[in-house]
Image (cartoon, rainbow, N blue to C red; front, side, top):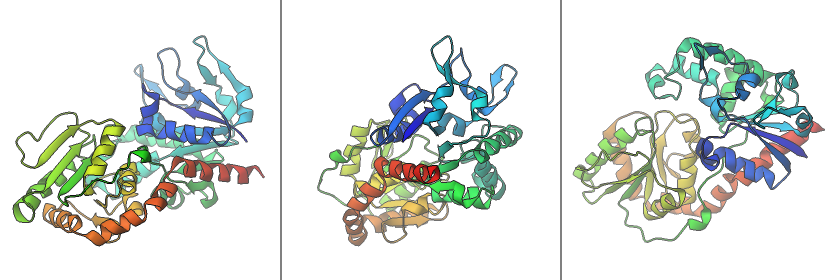
Length: 368
């Protein structure tokens, strides 16, 4: 099978979409004949504008996260239609995608799902990645996205909740939507057996408030005051240290993958009760490294965490409840042993090789 892989890369190819785009590309490259087409923006070309028929208003391009993050997979016959502009940048002609035959999308979120969240969960609107985009623009862009998606051969989603939303809310045929998951971006060779002290909690998230970092800190203070004075909280992700005077909180900053692996090895549990999380690769990484997790009972988080089995789920922003969950999970050896016993399963289920296999299986079936 020959594939063409279209992606809007960021400044650092390997870090685009938290490593997702590059990891999937590498996994597919090992399994099939694949050619990459860079669809990144530049001043001299508007590739995505041409393909997705977005609008320019007042000299500024109106675009949103899913398009920036979009990874597209199409079959080799499209390569014959690829031309190059004066900057030698591949440019796909819009007519090549007239009916969208043999075109696939891989995504963690759709605009229609965002609008559904705005309608049914208005209290979390400010935490969703699109909160800075005016609703009228989202509705216009949603029309474009829905048209393009419905003219494609299929949509690969990272999560089951998005797949369900596409079918039940956006009215896509069930056979057109394929939840294939995502893979971990940390090196499993860095997993080490480190003596545990049953008092260390890890939080990871650059978007500190959306990922519930403020709630974690508030609950952690109660944990130290009421249950476990020797508890330690390690915070990775934010660039600025907000915790200089907070006892027990260790600020790590924005870590490189190998550095992050060190703290996954060192800590006892992972806690990130994100208010909005389209997928949440970090939960998978925590489980692979043997850490039970505390997550929110919403979106894709409940697909990874089974309450009472490999961690706990919370339903609201109550720091008292979260502090109790922290204490219980730090002391729950049964759950910790269960997570460790499932490591081989997590590594296989949440590897990019497995994701690539699921994608190729669908494409091969559709070719017949």
